[in-house]
Amino acid sequence: MKRAICPGTFDPVTNGHLDVIVRASTLFDEVVVAVALSPDKGGGPLFTLEERVGFISEAVCAFSNVRVQPFDGLLVECAQEMDAKVIIKGLRAVTDFEREFQMAQLNYRLDSDVETMFIMSIPEYAYLSSSAVKEIARHGGSVKGLVPDTVCEALDSRLHQSL
Image (cartoon, rainbow, N blue to C red):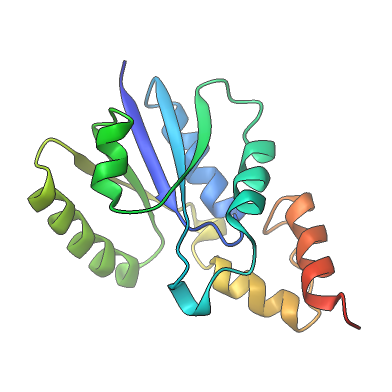
């Protein structure tokens, strides 16, 4: 079985993330979406690990070869535990490539049996990031069409609950 791991913080998951996951699912027997705890990233995630896993699980439930699993620690160790030989990373722009290229080289140094594969974003999502989605939502803008509907509702509830 050819298994790949598609890691990220997914805070929140965007339609761009989902596009990469779905496209990866056509290339591998199984894709494990590995949701990172990431407590230190940008002041900590807006959504809990359980919420992020839930959002993705709901969004990919129609794909029988995609499963979602939380992880904490080194990505290479997570891939080893899941017997995944490929790490899937989405790329939007050159700036993504520079950061992801460095990470791929570090991961290769840690385990040369785990490859990194890049999937280019489709033009429709080339500008899309979780940070941009949160910023738009914080200021009352619509993120419909950028994230799953359940994420739209959760963002509105979380960011505007005290209003």
